[in-house]
Image 1 (cartoon, rainbow, N blue to C red):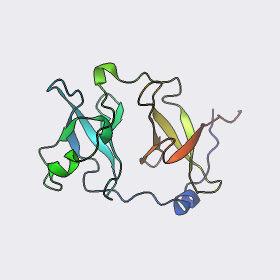
Image 2 (image 1 turned 90 degrees about the vertical axis):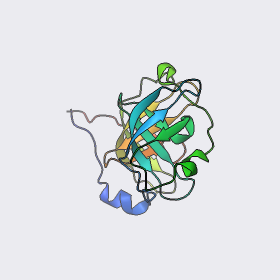
Image 3 (image 1 turned 60 degrees about the vertical axis):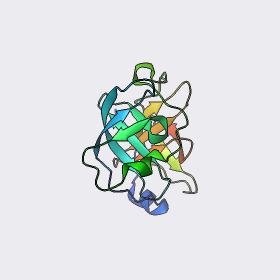
Length: 164
């Protein structure tokens, strides 16, 4: 089976992805449940440099969370950013890895992503999170390795394999 693909060179010139900060690819220890001291390991896969920007963590079990969903984050190597600046971010809906939101059947599917205001250009990616219950997040990993929030930053459609 082959996929229909579209060149991303033109697409990237139509949409300006946020500049990434110094914590990108940093290994971190994350506390998810406010009632325990248990921490889980992960990697920051998106960290927008602008104040108030998005921060997305990939856990070692290949699940994903936004910073707004965790209790706190720690890395012994953080000299690049004071920890207190991260603590000031509003925490809206903490999740628990033992009770991670039920994932939809589309998790893992190939998708085309359309960024708001980008004309008809689309970029291919993979839906890595598709919540079927609160907080109803969708996270997409683009083929170039960047991560976006479905519904907030873009819309997406399932990639239909070309007939062979």
